[in-house]
Image 1 (cartoon, rainbow, N blue to C red):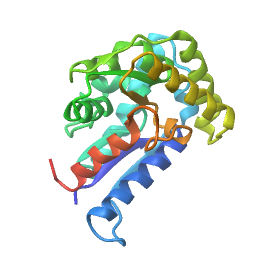
Image 2 (cartoon, one colour):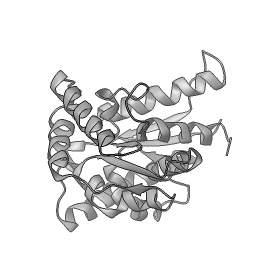
Image 3 (tube, rainbow, N blue to C red):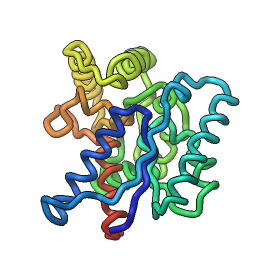
Image 4 (cartoon, rainbow, N blue to C red):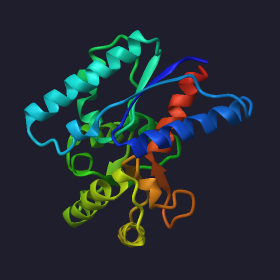
Length: 231
């Protein structure tokens, strides 16, 4: 198995999901006692939270690039960034290391393309839903994305940052997501992309009114394929 580096801490909840999902998938492919060879650097999310200005994102790129370099030096043969929103600085980070960084949106787009999905709604943080860095990757895989509804953006921002990223799950949040997804189905949307790694805490990924493409699970599957040298 090849050694994978994980840049985590954004949030710690997301990093926990990655560690669990990757190891469970490795065990299914190997033996129940097998653990994935992982290097994890958990960054201080407090220093990477609420970024708005260009200089803030430049600083984030420097922090994450430094982390990637440390993981590469420690022997990682590939890296995943365990956060959708931080893929905004993917290009800057990838340029600073010689090993591949597995892009979360490319993994999602490839899965949707393989499934023949050509239209979907993106749910996540404000920058993921409204900016182009994530959306254009899915469009490149033939997925037409509906325009973000700003009321939903505000709801999701509150739930993600005030609750999920500190490990809090509420019935109100579950109901809010169920309502959003139900309305999307009524509007003719064909699939939902959970483009926030913590959203599966309040969305039933496996039994929902619409097909759910959970970015965290799909990214973890791509990571496992890399570890097992299956691609």
